[in-house]
Image 1 (cartoon, rainbow, N blue to C red):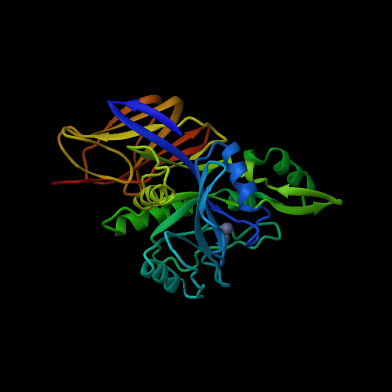
Image 2 (cartoon, rainbow, N blue to C red; image 1 turned 90 degrees about the horizontal axis):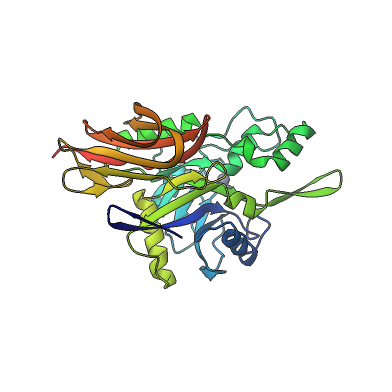
Length: 351
Ligand SMILES: [Zn+2]
Ligand SMILES: [Zn+2]
């Protein structure tokens, strides 16, 4: 947990990982070892999403809040990460039915790894969201395991060795196709369509020349794509209340997605007008004096996107960007071309 004091507003920030597989589906760890790995990687909460299984016992393990969802996994792609549900949902080969079933049960969902590369050169078949006219509640814009799968050449042992020993160098940016689709969904919706970053952790065991390699250990995954949730008061010690705090923040798009392998500092992004200060996942009125206030710990390439198009770019540690138009704004940060942090949108409206 990080606490930052800024503008006399106390913000508590909680780090977590979403999209994790256990022994209940195709992961290799149990909840005790996975939560231990999460704690060692500095996480406060994790969300387990096994394929078509809903068996993990939720609770606080090794000081980590363990929340359960389901990766609804039909046989024809369209994996859907269902969160905030209380019961198992049977997968359908009609993606629309899965989206509706999650909503009917009071949950919300994210299209998982919607654009894995179709030109992969390894045995892992790419899985995509194959009918983009089916609108999910949200989008997993970055998936650590998918990015790795997109880049690995199975026939090239050196590449395997490279990816094993320097595994985090292989992940650079979310798929531009996915970012575009997410921006389009946001332009079509009057509400904020939220995004998450997923690790898709399996800790799979593969055998090469009789040597078992764990691809990749949970702890390694947990130090990569992280969702940071800012809260104005601390997470409750009561599991049910804390779970609600975490899931509400994700549903609203209050989470910031960062790759901690690039940098573990958390940028601060506020939008300010004459009357108030808001942040991502929130709505603010446009006034004559509205600006984005962005701070990072070391100079980064900062890109502000308005309704899917570049609005402003900057390379610095702190900047103020005047906001003069209504629409949905989001911010990307990168270092030397490698993606580091992605905000959810902030909605600016004319009153
Ligand atoms: Zn999947
Ligand atoms: Zn998965």
